[in-house]
Image (cartoon, rainbow, N blue to C red; front, side, top):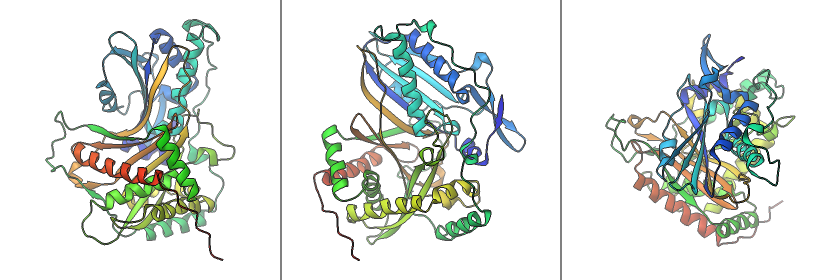
Length: 437
């Protein structure tokens, strides 16, 4: 079984980006049952059993030999193991997924980490995969449920083909319309993009122990998250717009000058729910495009007004159906890289369900973080990445960075500024302005 990658999927091969989704647990975990659940779920999703191979002038997905397919890895360790998993790559030619259970001595505290190559996943399918594994585990471990031993899980139906790339599922379009859209986008993004300068001097050496991916995390509790959502609704805004505005303002404060600067906010856009028929999150393919909005930002910009611009830009983009055109022109990004280049990149998964666990096992945390292989400290500057997701009623903003580019102190200070802005908005309710005729 083999399928060629479409041009959009081929872009991800060079990026070597991956989704890292994890959950922290308290209670007993049956490792054998979890391994069987993972095997059972991956057998239903054949792209998880593939690797990337050369095919003509591009690449293809091909099934891994049986002995090389991903299996659950289990070991003893502590909190530091999360960073190890985050920095462990998925090389081209090897498995495109990895599952690891790290258990503290004594076996009552655990960290379960799934790593999946972006060629075959997006945030929604990565979270769906995590939940499916624990659903299947619950069937094994819950005596009040199916009560089956791990080996007694029903064999999944054998897949006869790999899922089609999302670029082949888009609605029909006039090629002339796509060309005009591309020309307009090139004209809009022709000017240089403001990027954050690295605070770590470029040495060209990225092999040292400290040169690694780290995460600065902003986590609001359920009360703070609820107040922020209510404030957003009161002002007629989205939480995504508020987070985007807070990140833009923090980025502007780290650029030269005192006046407003034109910055760009890149907002990834989910395509699954917008296809006809909708594509289930269980299908392991990348189903995402992006919207780029240029806005004027000063260090003292009003975050609510700025959030309105960011949110309205995304809504107009979707209302015009341009999310499909954006996917169609993605193969042109290598020739016109500013098409999808923003000062800040603010993802937003929205409110998503976490795993359902059997009695006796409690989830204490869930995280979704993007990572990639290649960082370029010699470039001297890059966009700022913020990954936004709400699990269990708590909003988290993850700021991944490479320590050869941005120092942990630099990113922690930026994170704290964003937190102050969001909490000020959470405690403030503004009436929705009445539009003029």
